[in-house]
Image (cartoon, rainbow, N blue to C red; front, top):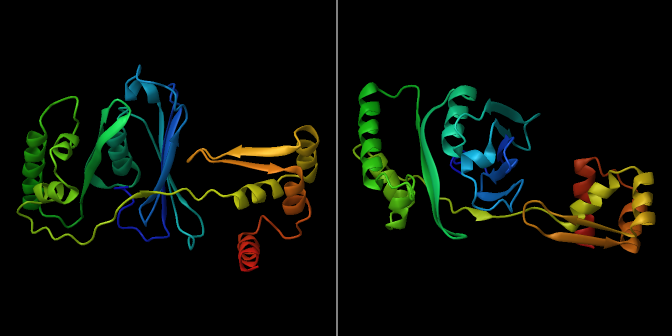
Length: 264
């Protein structure tokens, strides 16, 4: 969410950490609107591993895209620490040449997340040394206020004490003339739908769809992000998949087809 802040509403930011640990992968996708979704490769891992052990060695991968771009931007660096915020900070420095102060953490009570937040402060090219020195003093002050409690990593202890995102930003930018330019409330949103399942089936070879119908008599698919299960019987598949005439591989044709169905 922090790395995607300030982008156009249509822009997409995808961050994944793929490792050889038992978690296998964690992936999140955020839009410029603050709509977020994500999943982990092994959600039933339990609490017997630290985050570093769960992720293991691997890569940090970032994908950015916009409907108007000819192709997405891709970046990749190695997982160094196994802490997501520190490894993302290394990615920003190595792959995008961005100098940032970054921290992110969560606090848990059993399976209940009691606090989640962080900050990302980026040094711009024309930032004078005096401003950087002042910023470093503010960072040290924030770290001191949060304390060194391992149970509440920076800045979750402050959040548990009632500090808001604006409060934390005010501490970080104290003495630098901070003016809030806008606030965005993140919200979970998954774009999965039964129409997208139909499109996926239409992109398969006809013989493969016939084999599925002959052997299973139905199709069942589960969204990796939100867990919604979609089921389609033989008659519905034949009507929406086998009898369709449009080109499902063409985005414009597919969007027009959905619009026509909605209009009807």
